[in-house]
Length: 387
Image 1 (cartoon, rainbow, N blue to C red):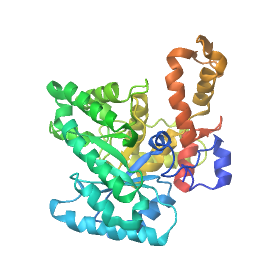
Image 2 (image 1 turned 45 degrees about the horizontal axis):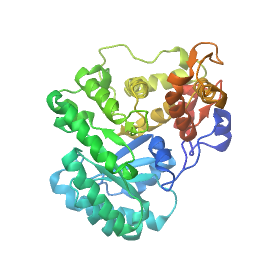
Image 3 (image 1 turned 135 degrees about the vertical axis):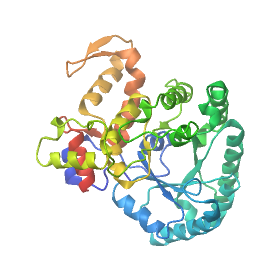
């Protein structure tokens, strides 16, 4: 699979200076963690789940979570597990390419149990999402994952969700973060990415952000995100990929504030109609939050509606300007450091301080591609939506 793989080769050639690479579940973990993109959640109870998975793959989705936890009621768990086994068998029988598939469980015991019950169809399973992850709970989940790998004789990845009250409350946050780091560091080879449960953060204080506001406008949430990145996503080789929080809205709501999308990037052709549609579906707030995610060190995003996936991927493509700067910074002859003017003559590139940014940018360029110099976000979004 590849990002923008649902777009025709001719259109990709026009869009990209460097096209996204192909990858699969066997690719290096570093590549997969960067390539997750918009991870689409779906309740495991859906009766035509296999069809849903194939449909989303055809629309450019490369990672999905099939949820047995908060998205279904307690009384639905047994039936949802049985449905998952049937749906994976359907996917296996049909063949073809599917996204990276993860199962979000409730308790550690489900991990080896489901792995065994999937039988040969387990080859379509990339791993498990581990809810309300703390040091104490996390060790049990990760030990269960080790047992599951022995059952199926293949690598299974973990994606812990950081959403517990211990992480949110100021008096316990530092200890909780330190404990989480110790746990994931011990299991570094199987922890693919860390996911943020911002809805749970808000719940602890009876809060809910409106579609006019990003997670970063809710200061208590922004503070937790900053501390998570500080401890768990450092660029010194100890960090992990941390993904962006879920965007909850996909229908028009009454607005209190002006739309957040400037008109000028949408003036060519029929793009003004696209701008109107994005605003009507409350996606202008999503676009701003995606930009703030990346500015704050997050990569990828949890999504609960298919309409959210293409904007995430379009904004993840590396611009030609970013690529040019990263290349200049990483040239071998720049190893001694120094300062240089960017090829775009609009900024200073300081080799040593900007090196970690450049390395992350080149990894993103590998999996999401590099846009041509004249190609902007609107072009990428339009192509992604039209397929």
